[in-house]
Length: 272
Image (cartoon, rainbow, N blue to C red):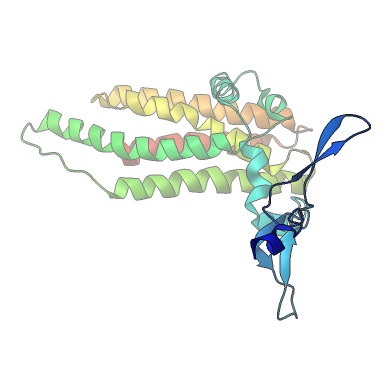
């Protein structure tokens, strides 16, 4: 029984040890391994077939179609907006510092190669929380100055109003000016550049919110008017440098007044 099975060839069985053969002419030893077909589990069943085989290494079972950014479907694809968040910390800090020097008016030239939406989202979100938190602190300090028995009370409506005002202004105002200037045909800047510029113009309000904690009403008005004027000049000068012709001065003045009006709104509502 053992002798009959001992004569069977075993080199073709899967998992068996490869046989060793000697090349008498060359005096070398070679190993013969059975051919193996790599397969991927689970099996890839084709449509319309009850059975199916295993999927080989080189084949693909599914393909994902990516919509290009210039296609109308790309507007609803998140991958279309990843390029506008491809910035590092140094670039963001440089652009925030540039918003503190409104007289240069060269912000569009700095972001021309890589406009970002990261600054718009990050600065707007930070400003919302800063206005809600420091606004409640400033109100408490003013009430505590007049009445020492005043208890701390957090006004939750500050958060809602801050979100509506900041996000609404940062998105809708640049959108309106973009369509207005495109209709007049005096600028070729993209909508992303407008959002980027207006987003960084709000950075100075984050620093100003800490100064508004001082419980002196006259100093508060001085701080907010200076900060609002700085931010308004930044927007106006950059719009002016990006437009052609002298007949659009009304657009620049409107942008200046809107930015200054936003600063006054912050003071009246959150730091009364």
